[in-house]
Image 1 (cartoon, rainbow, N blue to C red):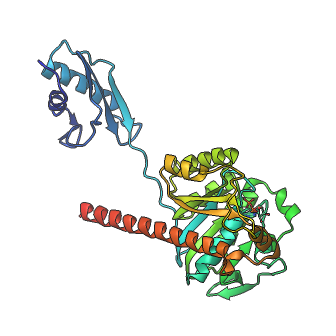
Image 2: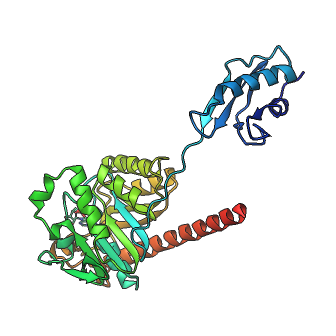
Image 3: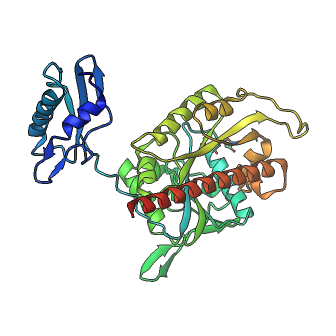
Length: 369
Ligand code: ADP
């Protein structure tokens, strides 16, 4: 007989799963990986649990059925693999019901301008009319209070319903909170991962964030346990990766993107921001000097199939804005415009993702009816 997958399926239809009255094909237990090489046949049977009591006897029965139906000369003994269904991943809890989108701002490497981009992006979103919040989750190097000219702010508690909640500091139309408001920098530096993680969790759950369209998390650089826990416990909409065009930064950005999109983490990357894309002197605004290299951001965005959300030049006023706590995104300047465009592009991408997600959900509901 000329062996083909249909013959194998027909043979396996003779094998019943004890106690169900159904055969293992109609129960969907045969993986779509039947391989036939001359007379050698191999495939996998999928079991619900790794300790299924009928695993061994079903494999034997499947071997016998194939030999009986398709011919004694078939090499099948020992070629049937078993797989077990993965337990479904628990859905992240909706800790912040009033928050529509939670966006992590990440970078593979420190010093690429992640906090500068977070600050100006969130201010640009506020200027566009969105309700926004920013959590400085860069627990070992909190710079948000300084960038918002709010270093001396002391957040207070208020009774909301039954709970005493921390009220975020409001500046430039943004609700902000940072570990920097509560402890001095040196103390936070010696915190271990779990302690830092718990402190951050408190800054999310014990705070009256209220209704927000966009809640940005300025994550620590690299790929630490802290932000992995954060993106896994919060229902994060996605992450934005900040990089410079420098080769070392690009390599780390690639690593970061691969980590977020890995099967285990599975957080969408909304897009890439190339910061310090070129240098433009204030007196020669038309001139561009590519001091860290040209086109690196565009290249990895293309390679990794993620949108390039924007390119921000190195401009003295951006640095000064960070130091003085007056973000350039507040101004109607060329740099203010660059951050406005970045915010618009990010919103566009988030909306596309949310639309696709609701379509997928509708299809799932229809299919389950
Ligand atoms: P990170 O959060 O990645 O560690 P920061 O946002 O603190 O980086 O930026 C590092 C330094 O670079 C800061 O002094 C900041 O003002 C400066 N900087 C960041 N982006 C720019 C830019 N586009 N132009 C000029 N200076 C910048």
